[in-house]
Length: 175
Image 1 (tube, rainbow, N blue to C red):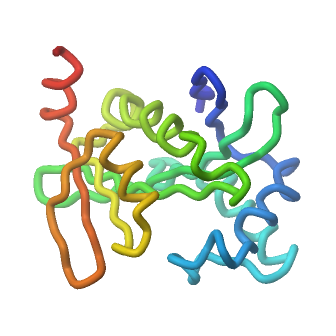
Image 2 (spheres, helix red, strand yellow):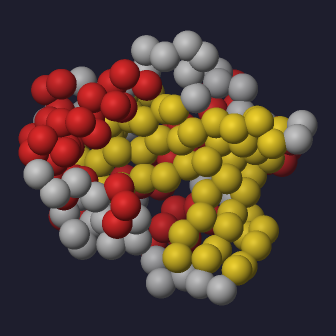
Image 3 (spheres, rainbow, N blue to C red):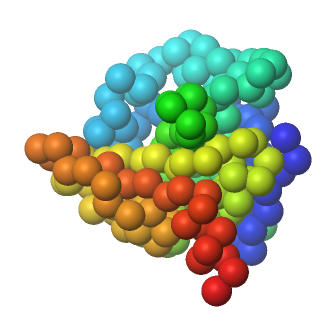
């Protein structure tokens, strides 16, 4: 993938040199508290997770898009954002998620990366419906979804589900 650049970030395919930052990101219990099944517990598990993300970038057809988020100014890996595609009826669903190292949370980086990814999802990768969810106890992720233009579509207990259709995004983009 061609990297997606924002004012402060570079969103790009992961590479082996990301291992140290990848391990910090995915082994941090505070960071992974809402998706513990993705947490790694050793450098070896992090290496396998990173390799899986690297391999996904070279799979055809590509259905897993896991990206590294780095600061443009320093090249430091500060997080990951990605999505998986799935055909659901007439829609190509892009299920999105993101993680940032705790010291970079609350600075708008997740929103910046997410907003930059949405047009690529629709225009470059065939997604027709962006889907994201979070635990109601995670208001920071909910804010990212709202700032990305997604609307609440379902509340199931503590789980909140948000979506944005390509049609709605295109209508907003033209205004």
